[in-house]
Length: 317
Image (cartoon, rainbow, N blue to C red; front, side, top):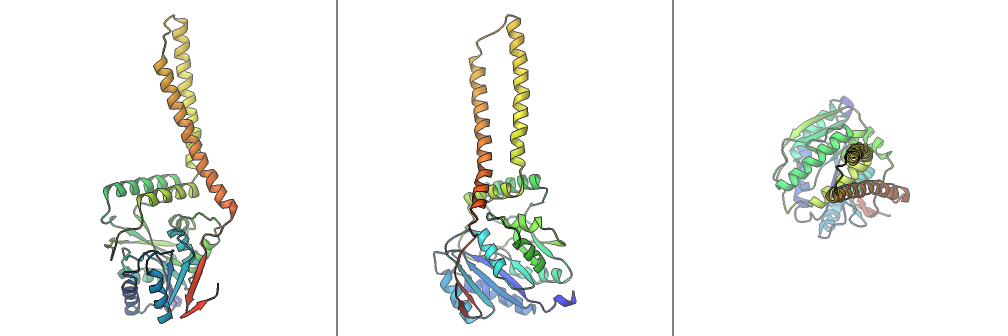
């Protein structure tokens, strides 16, 4: 669209312990934007880094008016950091990518082109998952397959590498939940969308901060946020156990009246263990949803900022 040609793009990048390379990485992003004549601003969110990341971001923001640096009061996690970026970004569209450049910045011109042609959500889809451990890759595929089946939304090889039109960002900001799942939120709102394929690049430095533990935590948040399927599974499990109990009861009565009744201690023990396990699992699933409700009812903010440097000057908090 002609009206989008000169509109500025906000590039939101969460940062956590990336001080060793962040200046060079952002210089590469800026160079690509300048070469493609894309008006831009960089919104860099320091998610409570423990290295020199904030010092680098502050220096960059003070030197360059196109960079906004935000420091959260502590490490809240990637999802709240993304929410902070969406809240602060002022561009006509917001592009989200990782600081380690595994989301290749060379794709930015193509994403902006698709947006200018009318797409309101431009989604990056991984051709492969790059160099990941087999265990992590298996768990990731299991998680995304499970949540895709439960929600009806295709998350296969999905990523946070997206460009969102301003109307999409405003729609997402209306969603009040405290425990967020960015990929799910951006899919739920709908709007005109298109996809492009990209190869996951190697990290420019260090190792991934996204551990198996964080993947499990994200999985729990995603499932409890976007589907009640596990609760329905409890009901289905109850009917299955009822059906099994009826069959076992008929068999027991038959054996009793036929005079073939036996001790059956092993069967009783196995049934007690099975039923006890299912009850505990069911209580655990219910507990997860209660925990979700508990966190939402408290109404605490998703994140807290301690410092914001915009247009070369620090804003009062």
